[in-house]
Image 1 (cartoon, rainbow, N blue to C red):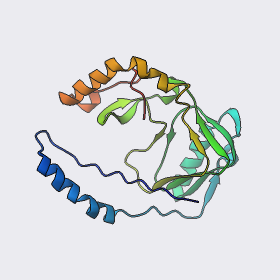
Image 2: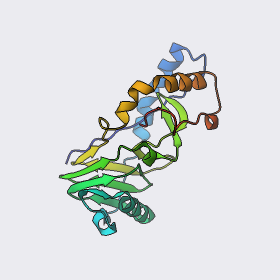
Image 3: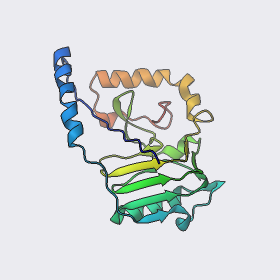
Image 4: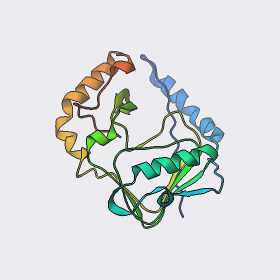
Length: 199
């Protein structure tokens, strides 16, 4: 099994930051990456089938997946998505010390109904913080989390939220103005009635 590890390094820039300051900031990236600790998990497994998931492409398996993640979070380990087609009505909210393993032959297929991704959560749109529909896979303020997969994660983009592209320009303009004008984050509320696509 191949392992892809993504590190997200964010350099916080203040208004008026110069190009030389940006270059100096990037010099610290190598040091930051060296300090990152790889996630470690105990060998306890929680198969979502044991929590009521059914890989039949139509049963909503989100409650089973959430229960498995919750139980795994208490002591750490792996949440196993076995081979099958698992329909998910809403976002997967991860928790610390959980490795979600999407097995070879497994497909997680997300719903196309925007209401499933409410209530809004703290997220970003084009790099600007706001409250919006939940990303399909979401984590905030957590540690020691991994998604490992040989199977498929299908966001149903073409059938669902990708169609918002033609409606999004007004909300894109609004969020850009809010960010540029320093509107407090808790006032940048989108979600229902808006067309900022979730991550």
